[in-house]
Image (cartoon, rainbow, N blue to C red; front, side, top):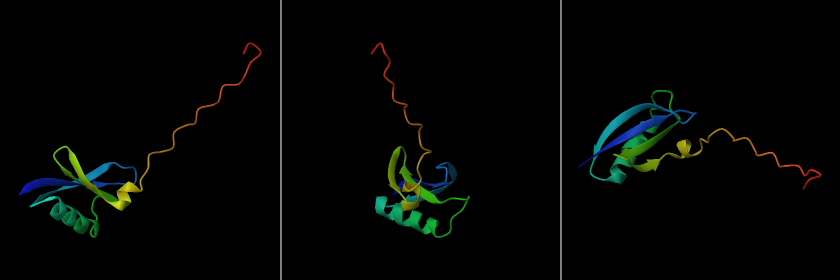
Length: 82
């Protein structure tokens, strides 16, 4: 048996809560996490499954969350000295 953590994530991709799961393998832990998605807690929109420092799975909802757009570089304009 292995210990896993299922992290609930909000729309800003911040962790809002955690559930501990003991499962025989990665697939069983993922199935448990999918069950948590059916009854979301902590204002979560997605969930990630981790075993220690190894991410096992991320829900589609969590995958669709993106970081805010980064500012685009302004192209350098040619000057007379160029």
